[in-house]
Image (cartoon, rainbow, N blue to C red):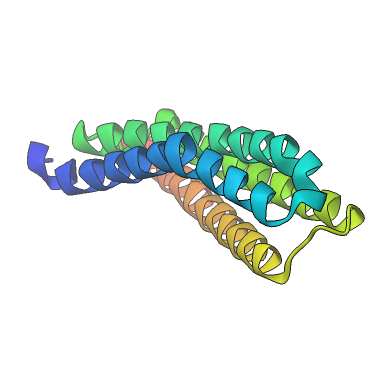
Length: 158
């Protein structure tokens, strides 16, 4: 495969990573302090919510790393390999972990009577997107495993 054919996707993945990293570094602490000033009765939730959001960024960045590795496999004509299947499996697990963490975070805020409807909608959107990504990568993983099986059978017969 041509070296530049996956370049656009790599740039997109890197830009997504830089954007989310800058939001984590600059915007999240700022919005947490603004929210604390606006609603001082929920000030005790500032650090647990920040820690929860930072914890969810770990599987997100790992999934981005796996996507970059998967794009390298595609670039090197190793698409039908166990490394590609493992990358898709890791992305699937990361999406599942993100979904679980957001559901647990929403339940925690609900138990604290601090789940604002806007926050609930954002949490449900992220959870839904993560579930869709998990299902999509599971389907791709299954298709790739079947393709690898067919390819290995064809290699043996020829």
